[in-house]
Length: 228
Ligand code: DC
Image (cartoon, rainbow, N blue to C red):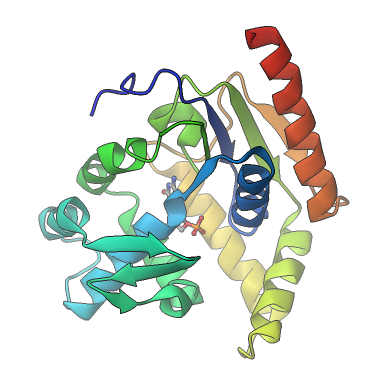
């Protein structure tokens, strides 16, 4: 699909490291504006999960790219289905995130997911979150936000989330995992995690979700005035 297939559908790109709150923020901004949303990390997690189930090695680029290209996935009612099976809770597991980060280094996997991600760009607009939404997937996004928070704040948020869901978790182990994921995502050669040159950086360490959402919606309204 051509990137300009929906030139009328504006994109808000929200990129940032793991557990910076991108997913929650993106879906709330989308709800507020009546836009569609894309959590691109879920696609990488789905490839990782499908590969794990088929016992495909994390470095088998051609098989992983094949899975990415043919992924039978459906996002419905806030849940995700892989081959008609509900998999939302599996996707949130830390091990799935680690595997997703590992396979996301592979250029053929990224290439196989590119058009699928662009396919989410439909009117009236899209809020997309991930690592390379503003740099690679939607370089013409109208608004690009790079959302960060300190490692300590992100580990604390993830710890709270996991505990609330009844999972066992250690704050120290979560901090270590986040740092390792950040390093892996930022140091890969293809589409590394980094702010787009025209992104607005937002540090959410001391902000609530509501404050972050309000800031992004305000930026969007300013852009809207400029566009119209
Ligand atoms: O956002 P997340 O934590 O669910 O993403 C899981 C992994 O997927 C992340 O560590 C790196 C990879 N990813 C990516 O490389 N590019 C994206 N746009 C989104 C996720």
